[in-house]
Image (cartoon, rainbow, N blue to C red; front, side, top):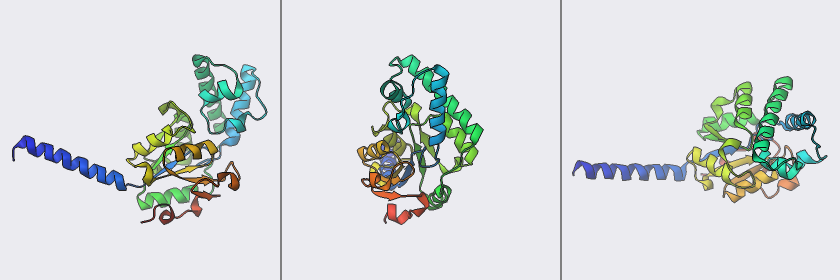
Length: 238
């Protein structure tokens, strides 16, 4: 066989192997706020501080209405402050800086059962990736505080997507980062828009009752109060 032909055959063989591995690879995709940590109070406080700082009105239900959505949607559509992209970006960056200040002031902890579940997945060889509307620096800051860096292979954050949840972009990109087909992945979510995004991506989803009552999450594939209630064999049967 000529060298060129052998090289083409090797390339086809490698492609076939990679395709096979991806078709069988299992993977876990985690939302961040409300799944790994409960930072609702931190975020709500940061929104309130921002409103006072820029002297802008804050609707009473703004936090609930915007939960799980990108800042770029919240400012024009929930708060009604501005539609100017440059102003939205400035406000968004300031809001997230205030959030990190709040985290440093009052600290942050993982939700009960989270580390146990992450260790179980790590021991089982199932790669984990974060798919969140949260800004990257918020996540990396908290990961360092928690000591959770080793549990996640990668993360997709607000800076990586053009469309926020319920659009499936964030979860599709997260699955691709760990080489997992949507049918073999499982998303862990607490927000209704996040569950809708996972389902739009064709990925099975576990609803976590951190922010919504169990009955509102009933359309998820599984519903739990804490992640260590789950079994690997339950989510990825052989």
